[in-house]
Length: 181
Image 1 (tube, helix red, strand yellow):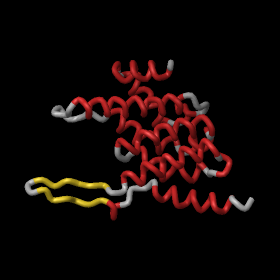
Image 2 (cartoon, rainbow, N blue to C red):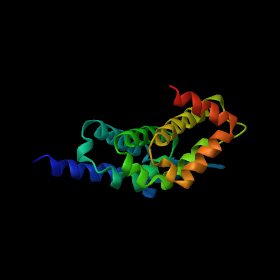
Image 3 (tube, rainbow, N blue to C red):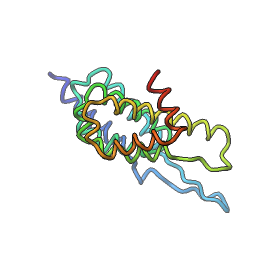
Image 4 (cartoon, helix red, strand yellow):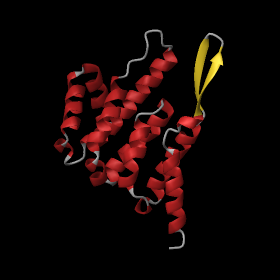
């Protein structure tokens, strides 16, 4: 019992670290170019990794309903390095807390749809293309977990997302192979 308040305090601190903080984003002037530096990226990655550990070790002490929106939703729409652990967290939540995920399923569709439809620039190097493919596969893994939820068909947005995936031969092949892993 004595450890519960500490855990709740750490939840609050960790959850707040999951959000994008504008004050940690700065623009560096490199002569004719401007480069945006996100000093909070590593903090957000670490925060989501801590949440992942919390879900594995003490799920009964975490309130997933208060975490999914806005924190997880924000992470699903963040940088590549943040999206990847968020897809894993979403898959775990879908398996362990399906009712909490179903309650907010509509709000999770847009960032997932944006991720699977993202196309790298034509001049992208192979590493960027490979990272994008990894991100799409990660999102499709999360979508496969969501699709296994009973009651997921109540969400029109999610049904439309699944329809979009099934109509795209490329996405469907990836989804089908992930689903059968």
